[in-house]
Length: 236
Image 1 (tube, helix red, strand yellow):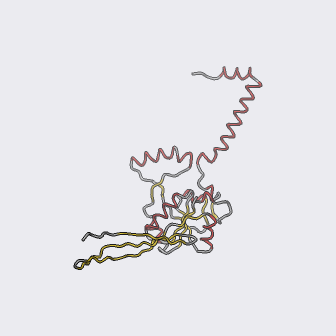
Image 2 (cartoon, rainbow, N blue to C red):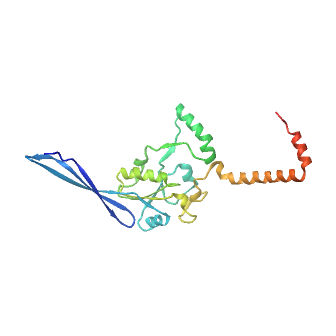
Image 3 (cartoon, rainbow, N blue to C red):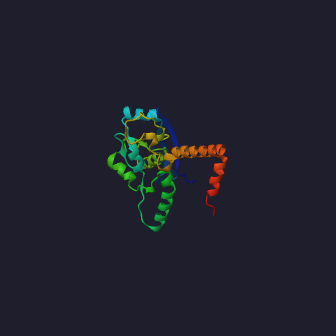
């Protein structure tokens, strides 16, 4: 008689706001009888992460009582965050002093840090435990970040850790218009990810444009004076 291996089937059960999966798994039973093999069926429910837009997120908070967990780094959180949210960063500042980290941090600070104001970070090893210390697996949690990537990764970690009611704003806080949520900070939620030299790029472009226009007009209307200035310029 051929051996019967485990098999698994999954049935979706949909509601307006989330999708649950009913998993049926058939495995061989340990006890056997002459000429027979007893099969055992296990049934479990696995909840999917619920991705919502901003308006749906507001409904989850106001009507369904979802708590907000902000998983952005400290710098973005301090610039602007939703009032009464919980801050549990998915990444924390990397202050390790081994040679490899020092080199990576120096390169990062001279490029991404300088132009975009991004801190040099590493995964937060206490992320899941920090959430578990404040919420039960049955808690309703809305995970937010700036662009939607970190919140998705954070929600996946929490789902694997046993949390059953998790939602994320699809495009992150960058898609939130001013006044949508009560917020705290020095800027709007949608602008909290902007820092570094890119924040003054527009001003720099305007200044350079003005200088170039003035130089063009000077050369056009005063060609002789412009030629004399060019002759006075030092040459290598």
